[in-house]
Length: 150
Image (tube, rainbow, N blue to C red):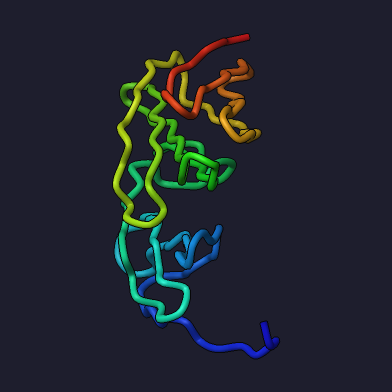
């Protein structure tokens, strides 16, 4: 509002990247920099920097960042924070939506895949289009169900 900067939080073992904000909650990507590699999503109070919730991702990298260990993507949608993860062994797609205020999941949907090569994603309010092994998967973000595969 006034153009002044202030430090919101300090996390020595994490690199934080802001993703979205809703109703006073800042959603950040937290990449662990000490120990084994891991990504998390956090909900921080935008005024105080206090962590309200934490979600540990199963996939090791954001989409486009890995060739093994799974990839993930997340986006704030009208329903909440939608998260997709493409995981190996067995190859599967997991779709989940979190309440941005509490981090509580509305449930998880899992779909078996023939491959875990996650190449990209395009988001809409209620759908996501995923390129997995050069096949287009259309996912309903309300249910997590795959509606179409081309």
